Image 1 (tube, rainbow over the protein chains, first blue to last red):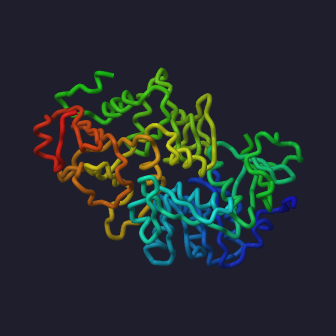
Image 2 (image 1 turned 90 degrees about the vertical axis):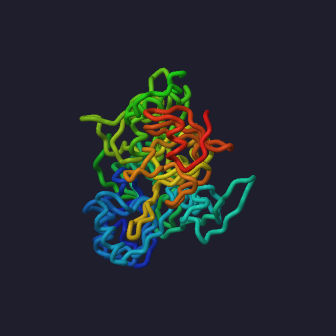
Image 3 (image 1 turned 120 degrees about the vertical axis):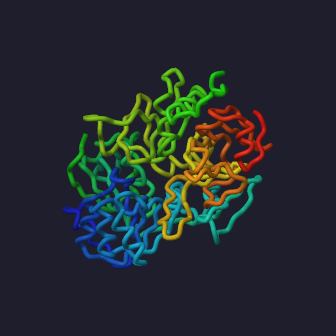
Amino acid sequence: MAPRFAASAAEAVSGIRDGATVLIGGFGNAGQPMELIDALMDCGATDLTVVNNNAGQADAGLALLIKERRVKKIICSFPRQSDSWHFDEAYRAGEIELELVPQGNLAERLRAAGAGIGGFFTPTGYGTLLAEGKETRIIDGKGYVLESPIHADFALIKALRADRVGNLVYRKTARNFGPIMAAAAKQAIVQVSEVVETGGIDPEVVVTPGIYVDTVVEIGGTNR
Amino acid sequence: MSTTYTDTDAPLGKNELAQLVAADIANGAFVNLGIGQPTLVSNYLSPEQGVTLHTENGMLGMGPEAVGEQIDEDLINAGKIPVTELPGASYFHHADSFAMMRGGHLDVCVLGAFQVSQAGDLANWHTGAPGAIPAVGGAMDLAIGAKETWVMMGLFTKQGESKLVEALTYPVTGLGCVSRVYTESAVFLIGPDGVSVRSTHGTTFEELEERLPVKLARA
């Protein structure tokens, strides 16, 4: 089915309900879908489980969702940063649950969800605190840890351009988690700088095929 | 290359150490430089070496830090610093980036450390201090991913304790993964037979034997 084209970020996120699991793209500010996150703030959904590489920076985007205690649990690799004060405060107050995941395992768990993989053995984290309580196996003399897929209700991601069937291209390192999050969520909501007609993106350079994309909203902005 | 094995009378400064690491990287290698001290290594890689830098947030062919008009918020490194792209660069998503690493396609990864054990175990992600908020990022993936993991660190803590240890007291990042340790005082090689000293800087093999809690051999 062709994606829905929302008239605004608010309309794009209007289906997100309390208790949803939401994947949010971006690594630092690169690829962070700021307008969609702001719209999620405004729509009032709470008790969210959020998956992102970080736990918000400064006083914008995800950091504000955490500040307002709308996130009950965060799954991420690198919460502690010089400007993660809202997360730090919520965490120290015991008001947010943290599942800390090595970055490559986070990416692969998302990929597994989108690819229908029930779990996988990875060497990352073997013998560490982050593997405690998990099944392990020695394969060809090397230790591996069983990791599970991360499924989600929604993904909020940012791409450079979409066509009318939802094919996406990204820009530089803003690609980061976008393609795997789009595939891992039941509904992928994408903000783009521009929408072009079908056929306007060379099929050879499509990064995320439209099959993974459910909602697109054109935001404008960076279009270099 | 022979110069890299030379002992010196003075300890090495951070830039000299970075220069030493850079000279040890093979021509044509694919390399990931960790955040902090390892980043300095890129300043000493010569164009003739043809080294390609990987950054785990999804890029090969990373160029120097961006300045002025080059700064682009969509082009950053793993430390979230704006960088540039070199001809031949490529972008890919996070799962591919870590598959590239975990799959053994990178030749060398250079990381900082709190401690390295004589078995090559690495601690660099968490002090384990009560109340500290843990953050791991790509540290555990980097530690075990590349064909070789090298560490750059000060050999001693501020209290004068050796950071090259018999067994880790900090939480583990990866087991048996470190093959070289570059410090201001010496370069150590770690292999199946234990730790050997490749060169000394401002100290001697005998002094190191006395101060370090691990058995040392001459490389």
